[in-house]
Image 1 (cartoon, protein in one colour):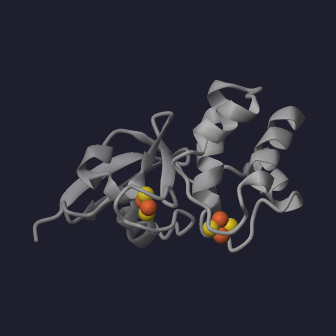
Image 2 (tube, helix red, strand yellow):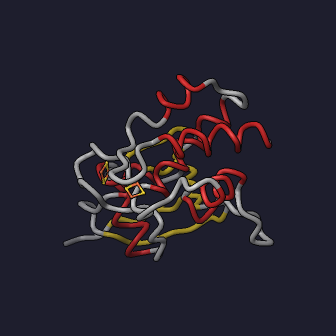
Length: 156
Ligand code: FES
Ligand code: FES
């Protein structure tokens, strides 16, 4: 299959690759760039495990056609810590407040929460629950996740 050339900004760095045009953004991140934080759960845009931020908006990378990423800015969970390795306040809050159990949903949860806090630094509980409404967790019951996001917002 003829490949397409893509060039975009990934976690602050300009990157390029040649990939099959049928690949999704998720497959490209995981296989071409070896960034495996975003997970494939459902693969059809229903569970949010693959959530990343593109040009400031959350997207389901599992259904995002990779040719459309050319020229855009992508942030993944791997891009949240700073250059010294200090975690994003959301990552710390999830770790310290049992927001993580099996961890499969966690990357997507945190990216949805990051997008929320970038737009609204002091969300109420309803706003937090709405922001993660596209992210399914089979483990935690959501209480610790919502609390973790609230704590991160308050600390920031
Ligand atoms: S894997 Fe993308 S929404 Fe479920
Ligand atoms: S921590 Fe297991 S799916 Fe959320």
